Image (cartoon, rainbow, N blue to C red; front, side, top):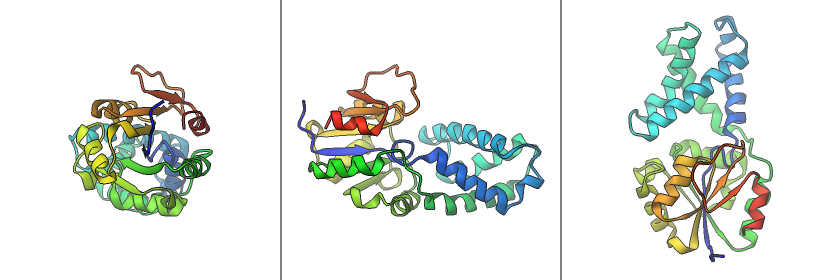
Length: 232
């Protein structure tokens, strides 16, 4: 087994439970803007539409077709349009409130704190590579209590690149003072995290929380964070 020293984690959907936190945040935002009086559907329908548009627009953002700011408000704009609410100022107000509240949420996946402490106790050096926004991601770490585990966090904003591009992985390796043979990437996204790591020549672990079909071959695959103890 390779002698890993540096472990690079993805944050959203791998450690920090984006879907649960987004649902909780949207619940707050929904009430704040009294959307129940304007959306002729249950909240769960609104939430599902948001998740759909968020996923589609994140893909466009990662591929360089839209900016970060466009992503933030257009996911709300498109969700409102699905309910026949064509109100761009409202979409931007919702987006602003959403981005204020979201990073304060604290839901992480089961066994997140335990596995991170386990790895630190075994003298691994932990880092993050994330396509999330710099200020937002630091706030997530602080409020969820994850900040203490990581030496470096590399974001798309600081690296001027996005997973799965090789450049963000090269930037992360340089920032951490790491080499490929002693490094491994852990993430849930087959394109950004797994294919990205493979493109960079880095070993990788696919965290398959949702039982997704895996058409590419990661170095390892787990369905629960505790299973990482069988690898490290």
